Image (cartoon, rainbow, N blue to C red):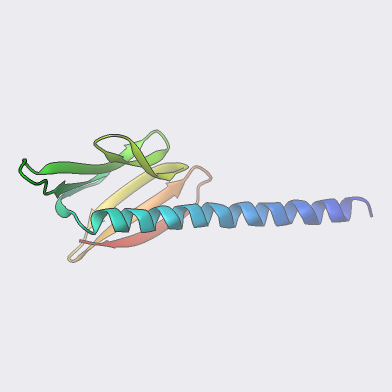
Length: 115
C-alpha cells in the first residue's frame, strides 16, 4: 500500500518530463522558423542549413544552423536554438525542408520548414 502512491507519482513525473521535452523541441522549432523567416536560403546540407542575411552597406552575412555537441545552434556566434539533441538532419524537398530531430532520449521528431 505504501508503494502505490509512490509509483503513481513517479509515473506522473515521467509523463511530465516527456511532455516538457516535447515542448522544448517544439519551442525551438518555432524559434528556428522565426529566425529563417527573414533570411534567404542558400543551401541545404544533410547536417546544416545555410542562409544569407542582407546587411546594409556590407556584404551579405552567412547564417548557418548546425549541430554542436547536443545543440542545434545558429552561427556566427553561438546561439543555441534547440538543446538535448543527438542529431539533426535536413532534406531539401520541392518547396519544403524536412528536418528530423533525434533527442538524447531517442525520441524522433520530423518537422517541415518553409524554404
